[in-house]
Image (cartoon, rainbow, N blue to C red; front, side, top):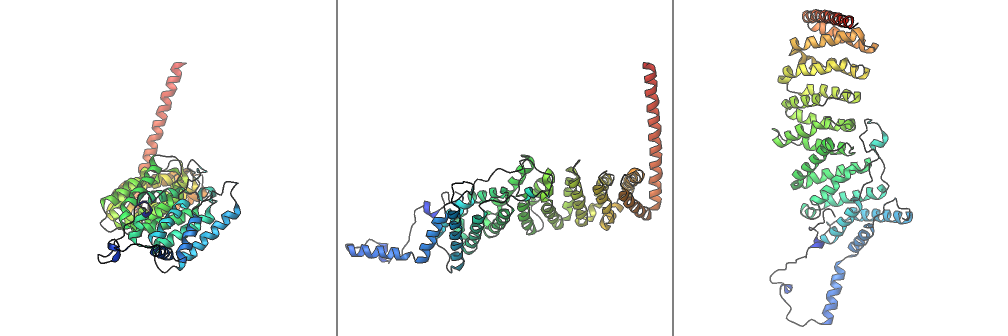
Length: 450
C-alpha cells in the first residue's frame, strides 16, 4: 500500500529512549507485585484518552471500502460510513495538538485503502477530437460521496502534520499511486488530486525532482506510446504552470529540456484541444522568462501543425499570435518567413473559420513588426495568398477580410506590392504557357497512338 511499504511505524519496532538517571533506564531491583502490574496496565489504558479511542474506532470503521457497483452492498451501510467519515473530519478539524504516530499510522492506511483503488476502463479508448464532448470532460465516480470527504481529511492531516512525520507515510510508492489516479474520469476527483499533488510538491521539497520526473514520464507515454486519451493531462499541466512560474532566470538546462522534449511535442496528439489552454500557458511562461526560447517553440509548433484538423489549426494560430508578442524581437527576421508562409497557407484554407482566424492575425501590431523585418522575402508570399483568395475563395466574408488586409499591405509598401503583383502575373503567364505546351505534347502522343 502506497506510503506504508517498509516505512510505517507499524512495520518497524518502536524504540524508546529514557534519561540515564530515570528509574526505567535500568531493571527494577525490587520484585514486581501483582498490584504493580495492575497499576501499570491501568496507566497504559488511561494513556489512550477518549478522543484518541474515538478516532481509532472511526478510522477502523472507515477503512472498509465499498465499490458502489456490487448489488449486495447495503446502501444504509454506505450512508453510515459517510456519516462516520464526516464525524472523523469534524474531530480532526477541532484537534488542537498534532496527531502522533499512534493515530497517523492507521489513518494513512485508511486513506490509502479508500483512495488507491483500481479505476474502471475509460469509456473512450481512442482520443476524441471534440473538446466539448460532455463524456470526455467528466464521468462521475459512484464512490464520490465517500472520496470527497477522504480528500478533505487528507488535506487537513497534511496541513497540520510536520514534514518529518509526513516523510514516514508519503513515499515514492504513495506518490506514484496518487499520480495514477489522475486517469480518473471524474473531473471533481482530478481537481482534488491537483490540489493534493501541488500541496505535496510545495511542502515536501525533497520529493520535487522525483515528482517532476514522474510527470515527465506520464506526458511522454501519452504522446509517443499510446493512442488512448489521458483525462488528467490538463490538471497535470496546471500543476506545471505554477511550477514553471517559480523557476528562476536563467533557466536550468533540465527545464529547457522539458520545454523542448515534452511541452512542444504535447501539441501533437489528436485530443490536444482538451488541454491546449493549460499547455499554451506553460509554453508562454517559458518564453516570458527567456524570450529567445520563442524560436524553439514556434518552430516546434510549425513542425506539429495539423493537416486535416481545423479546430487545432485555429488554436495553433492563436497561440502563435500570442508567442509573437513575447518572443525576442531579434528573432523576428529569421521567424518572419516560416511564420508568414504558414499563416498565408491558413488564410487560403477552404475552411472559413481557419481562413478568418488567419486573416485576423494581421490586426496584431507585433505581427506587422515581425513581417516588416523581412519585407523582401515575406511580401511575395503574402501577395500571392491575397490574390488567390480574391480570385476564388467561396466565402464572401473571407474575401472581404482579404480586401482589408490587402489595403494595409498596399499602404505599408505600395511600390513593393506592385512589384510583387507584377512578378505574380509574370509567373502565372509562364505557368499558362507551360500548361499549353504540355497539352500540345499530349495531343501529339494521342495522335501518334491512333
